Length: 383
Ligand SMILES: Cc1ncc(COP(=O)(O)O)c(C=O)c1O
Image (cartoon, rainbow, N blue to C red):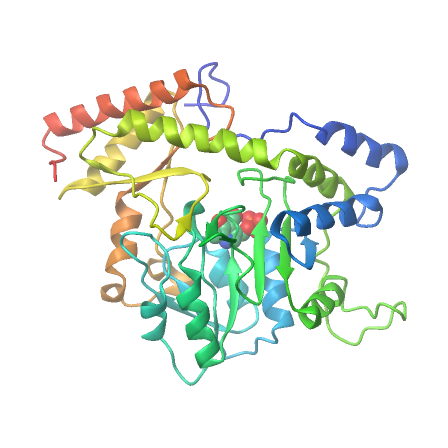
């Protein structure tokens, strides 16, 4: 399987068919290629409008967005921050780069995300905060998490890297916690190549993040550093792409919803697959179309199906490894049965918004064939 194959179906492709090239060309022509110039502010304003947020600040990527938020919240060595066991490693790394301790918590079987009742069991006197991750486009149930955080005096940093536009009871993710953090890597819903954003209601945090993002340099006294900061700035070139993407975000989201709907229809009769419906309070977005395999041999079946789809020129992706299994975050496995099961049996299918109905049909057909083969060889059983 290679990208050079003419009928290769990649897992994800950015859609850069709007004003991206024009705006980037404008940056080159006008010499605005670093972080100064009009595009960064315009992208930030468009993002504020989209989320009805008072403040949004671009960052160099989603990981630096998380790191910046935690710096502004004054995370100190030894402070504990609760994170889900099933997430991309950057969620925990951002905590550890400050000397903080990520306390891993298992996720919900039905929604694949952190939930308040599980967070509560992990509280200790050293708990400073929690990072709910809206995984694979599925929002966490934020209201109970916010109630718990208020009661316990914890900060909340939402990791929205995979869920731009998702909402919880009508309110967009990233607008519940102290800070919402987004990623614009090329496989994300909105892309700037590499890039990120922090949003917040809190003026104190916005001001602090603006300074820390720019080397900790005083805004009114050049080259005076009151804090030890970072260079987490986004370039104008990236912001130009981001602004063009914002202009078509509704279209990009609609295209993804269409792909999601086509998959749900095409795969509905496959009992060995579980495509969880959204809970009534949730409005997920389609980042990667993700499902899990059921039955006693679900893990090996998932792996065989992946290999078979790869042979047919279809790229897929297994779920993240649960953090507790990897050396930097190792923790006793018996505490994370759900994330372990999800990791072993979950799969994401090609999800780019420019897939055609025929492409989705081809993936669904190849998946059915692969499942039949796995079933015949006794690798999988039905529910
Ligand atoms: C859940 C999650 N958090 C954080 C990140 C980090 O974002 P970035 O790759 O832009 O640093 C990613 C994605 O890559 C992610 O999926």
